[in-house]
Image (cartoon, rainbow, N blue to C red):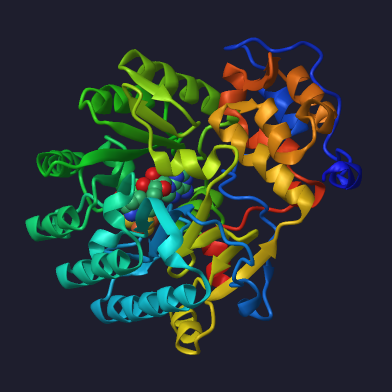
Length: 468
Ligand SMILES: C[S@@+](CC[C@H](N)C(=O)[O-])C[C@H]1O[C@@H](n2cnc3c(N)ncnc32)[C@H](O)[C@@H]1O
Ligand code: SF4
């Protein structure tokens, strides 16, 4: 390959003077790093600069040489929640039974269109993530139909991991729903707890208390499911002591897996508007974030959790395979289904129509329900490996060379020098390792590895694409 890709690659646009001293852990030059990079948002997929597609059929194109066995992550977006939280940027709509039933009709249609083009029989769903949204907001019949439908196209019993997202709202959760999930091979439940402080739960508009969340955790564990809980930190006005209280409270529960996300005030959300208008305190600075990130990783580490990405922590070596697969180099293909779902399949990155009505209309016209897409060029395919791979803190540069035909040390020489001088990465043998400081700032590392255009393109969130 890949000489041409190396030659055509961007030149680094971002560099200002790097910090003079290499910062030590705990004493990182946060402002220095920010003056170079300054990225807060989570790089969830790459490249971000998708464009509207004129003919979505050009995205669903059969691979002329399909692999005999194609392991993929399957992501199913259920875009409904019982109530919508003011901090959430996802593609979500208040649950209504009729709308959810129409959504299932359309999902069935999307699967049919997919199966016409791809040999789904040869596709092995290695992991399945049914989320969104809050799939548990649907009624029992709808959940049964969803799971049966997925089972018709994918062998759920052969999947390594099947995760279903719930919200700890006791009004939504019945023993029958858990029974349906178990019967259809769901082994893992993921739910947002977010905070153990009543005032923060109110600010977030969660509609549940921490006691109710604990009750649901007990229910889920009693049902034999593995559990993940999502927590958010650096919330508006939140102190380090409050984050430490949250940590103490939840690490005692001995849950298999936790996600800890730094709050991002996404434009277009009601909480972000309240912050902008000064009605709610600002979230902490990057320095506050760094102190909280360290408290989270150290506090969880003391209780046996290992952070294998900046957001995900497993007890006694537990990991969520879905997250590992979508970030580990080379990234596994992901088939996203449902309104707003993202896919990385057959060399394309694409986002489905976000609006459930438009999604259903496209499917009814037998058209792939694709809203925006991008066929990865050679440079982007190479870049993607590093941009997403850095989320797992360590890149095997021998594997990078095997995959791309170029030496990472040469291809990214200037980027590695810059990141090393900022104290974010170091070369250890044939691996590029994030330093402890770099682990807190993987978004910045990803941005440096991103191509020129992509580095300057804001990552669209669900809420942006809902308006598109
Ligand atoms: C699909 S939701 C989780 C499942 C379920 N809907 C619930 O809320 O319990 C995914 C997670 O993203 C995180 N999240 C949402 N908005 C966020 C924001 N603005 N900043 C950081 N994390 C956010 C929350 O922790 C949330 O639990
Ligand atoms: S955080 Fe969860 S429940 Fe709240 S709006 Fe987002 S997806 Fe729905």
